[in-house]
Length: 196
Image 1 (tube, rainbow, N blue to C red):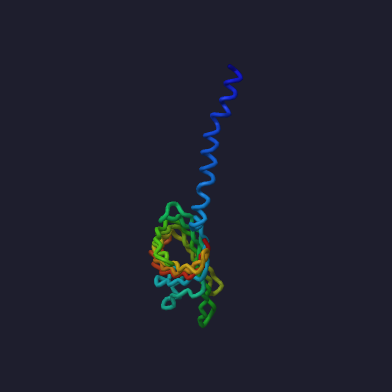
Image 2 (image 1 turned 135 degrees about the horizontal axis):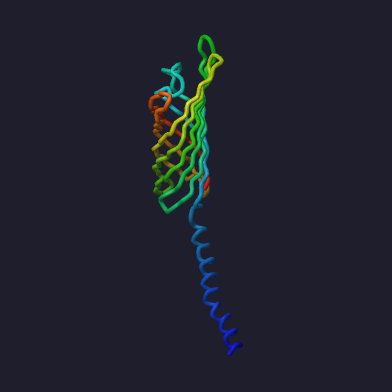
């Protein structure tokens, strides 16, 4: 009886082992035909700050033409991604007395919904996080930070099996500060390469 019981245990494991091997092997052919579930992207960023969120001296000159943006996204479902993005925008303005240096940085995360139509992948997203502004002029510096919300969207054009070109437009709203700074409204554009 003891020998019979010990021999039946390995036999009862065979269906379990076969099922596990099938589950491990079965997804491989399907995953080879699908996109990677993670993407990274990076490229040029342009910021328009009509509210002059850091320094009033920039009134009438609200463009930040130098900038970058980078991020990572991971698929949650077939049409929904979790996104993390960081960006930086800079400019220098020369006045009669000094050179004014300004910069904005933002770090945000949130959900993205996307749909693919041929070589195009269209998406909308809502990111939230923190924006930080810094200015220096006349030997003095000032900085401000605030919670921000950035809804936006864009389109990816597939260049190859792994690389896509992206155009993205966002509206950024930065909450007013406890020090008395008013709400700030900004417009953000990104041209980037995406690797999946």
